[in-house]
Length: 334
Image (tube, rainbow, N blue to C red; front, side):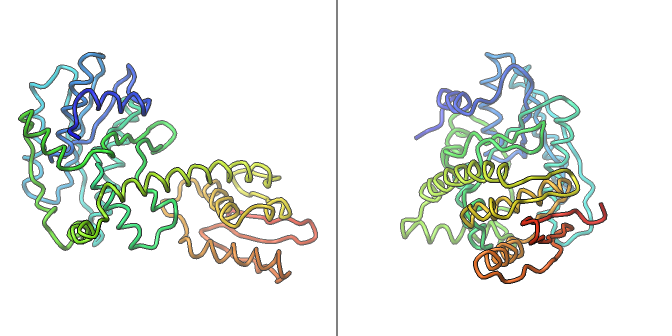
């Protein structure tokens, strides 16, 4: 189904985003982000919503600076509601350049939104991106949360939400929109570079589609897993509240008999939540396998009375007090 301004407006209404306040949209100049920006600009006119268009120049390609300027020129006549801003990143000497660039991009845009009191940052991820994300995470051994893919509305922090209104829309539909509405765009040369994992996955996806594993089916699977994830999150939040008997920024104490009443997956999620509470500013969560080792050791203690060994994970000390029947998690150096 072709994307129209009408069904785009219905999507935004269903997502409950975009009020009277300003919004931001990430625009690289590619067809996906230019199509999203065009849709938002038309939507904003009737509502008087101001759109801050953010283009990040990573400095990774010589032509990137000129392309960023060209995006601003393209947008110049679209609407008075639209203003364009170029954010520049000082490239570090790091081999994992794509991952560093992604973090820098989000960090720069989030800081801009904070300064300008913007609560919604729109991103042009679409159904084919969702399919590649699921395959990429499957290859990395992700669990349920990772395989549920990208969320249409996702909290970046307490003040900013990432909004992806095109997740039900395919790449071909966006290209069609660009053609029909004469929306200009750049072709990203990195999309043909097989050095990048996503490009290789894109090639593999063509083979999978021949076997019936289309991007639409992968996206639907992600939606279903997302539904399961949300249900588990609700159950885990209730279990966490019941099992925690002490909590502050330095230590969390679980009542073991209450914690062990829960299914394994819920116990695991309670441990992960506790880690996030004690390490709120950490960039990286401990590897899932290491948290699972603690889970299995706790289960061995509960079922077979195998002694639980005190250990440290991600800057948090896990210790059992059998006499009091509690599991203590304490932040190191607190």
